[in-house]
Length: 354
Image (tube, rainbow, N blue to C red; front, side, top):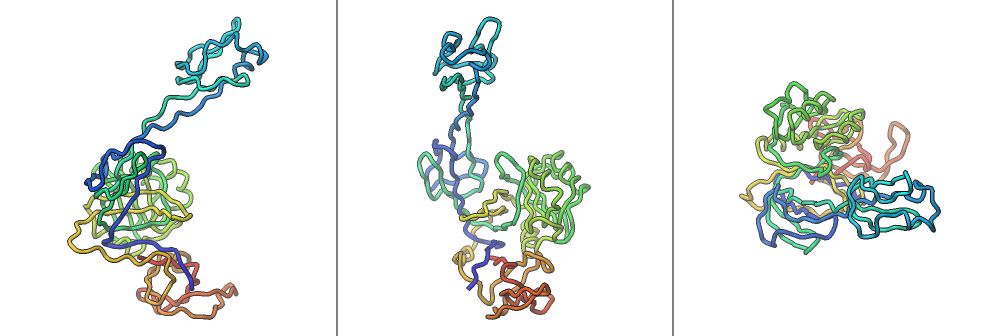
């Protein structure tokens, strides 16, 4: 049995997202309360960063004699530029404002003031769980599209806005001339990749986010430094967006959506995602249990050439390995692709679509 990676591209499901503070703080909502995506649901104060000042070295005095030259004590509050030690014409000033936490081994350690941190709900929905001082969980019914790669958008790595599909086909790249003032505050969807000019235009017109098929490798550093979150549904490379993902995004053109570019490859796996809240006019589609083995009838996405990005259905799971063109013997699956007969695909080149 083979347990492939799983990725969600579904028009209706129950989405549950945990919102956790990075440090103990205060949860501002109650269980059962309805929240909006930009609503602050919890807050905390993050500890300031320490600044170490080697006072004895700067004054050129032995440690035993340093005390007579110090002008501060542990617990004192100092301003940036304030004198903390003086010997003759030599003066040592505080490099930052904060509180003197410790004086040890000739060094003065100053901690900057705590940094306020506010946690937003991220998605509209109902608070289903509250853990006092630490966080909460929010649930909603939504369309869910997960991607492979995400970057940019620091420090929150999330955004909320209206989806706008600016390409007609899933293999059509996002072009700079389509990003103009009318895109202000929107999340733009393109079929394939983009170039650097698109990213520059998006920053200029304050676009909330970009969702594309594949991202060119040379653009990765620029996207990582960009204030705009970017999701590459198919990952790195010049790849068209899979037809199911593009069709679902295009169907929801004009709806509000949340996007997150957070990625965690290890369990519990976190993928970049687009969440499109939709009215629960019917029960959400049942989710198959995660971690189930690959089976005949499963819908899969191919993640490597020559069929990268293609979507098909598993029609057979041969028990014996087969030889590839490279000569390697590998276990695989027979996958029926749209418009083509079954092709043999190594198991490691498959992801299950949920």
